[in-house]
Image (cartoon, rainbow, N blue to C red; front, side):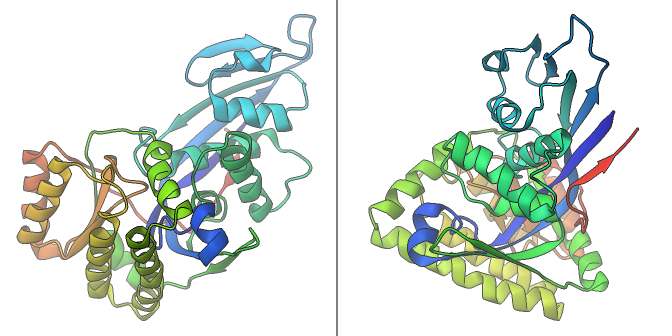
Length: 330
């Protein structure tokens, strides 16, 4: 039995420019980091018997025992099993620290953990693991998402990712001092809106605008990409105060990508949080609900927490995580 786990992530700047519809024309750049919230897949191989030969028992969205993979309801698991299961008896189950569809990259983390649990011989490095997971979500399932989540989940830490026109990806480690990480752990606050959504539905609108070369959307994406330079400077120099203002600029640019990016109750909460002391923030992932990240100096945190409670937002404490995918045994 083994536990294959992969961290969730926070995109700090450049999110959305990793979608192929933008990156293949203009090259995307994303800066993000893994956090200490994870998705885990527990896998157990059992002794072959007449009853278990060539069968898998999967307890994911629902439990099923089958040798017929189309019966596996979870599309990510089904695609991973189709590609990497060696047909030896297998039992798998999964669990995660946050609900799916909340902008934390949980689908990518699940794909990373799932491929890691199946341990294919063709996947031997974290980069290969990221690419295998991305191929499941973007290739096999055809979802209009980008590749940042898979790299952050597989590699962990702070990463700057460049998505080239030829479809290749270059990943650089970003060195953030322990002192800066500790301060950001205290000053960045994460709140769950209580709303889940399918990121592909929201990103499909951006994808369509990018393919049609919508001028306003492209200019906003160019601006979001440019923020990665500012965020990189802020992180490596330890300028945590600048992080909030960069996040706020990101918020304003992202609002115009699609009418589905935000909700009125989230906009109201964000405006009131800014008035109470937050210097900036962003909707994680595609938007449309999920989690809101805020930069709040310590003096304003009590007031922001009170606002969150009044608006029925739930705080999710977190820390940045340097470790990526890992395998452990119970």
